[in-house]
Image (cartoon, rainbow, N blue to C red; front, side):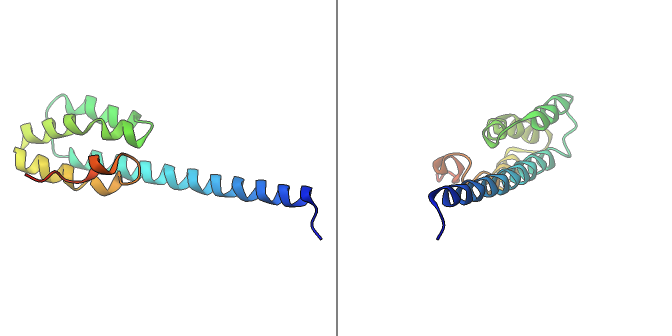
Length: 110
């Protein structure tokens, strides 16, 4: 029969394993979101795009990346047009589900 200490140790190990897996998943999802944002501005040639790329690379969380949406929109809209900027930003939403408020991720209806 397992003792209280044995059960506690097993529980701690299980939590540690889940934490490691969660951190790895989180890191992978952050990398994927970062890559998607960089892809949105890949064809922008404005001089300020380099600064925006740097901000995206340095972002530490999904919230940090989410905060860069307006700059991404401006960059794409200036290079192409507003409709394309809107379309590109909407294509990013699935990268942020569960990381930012669900009301923020859903597309706005007119």
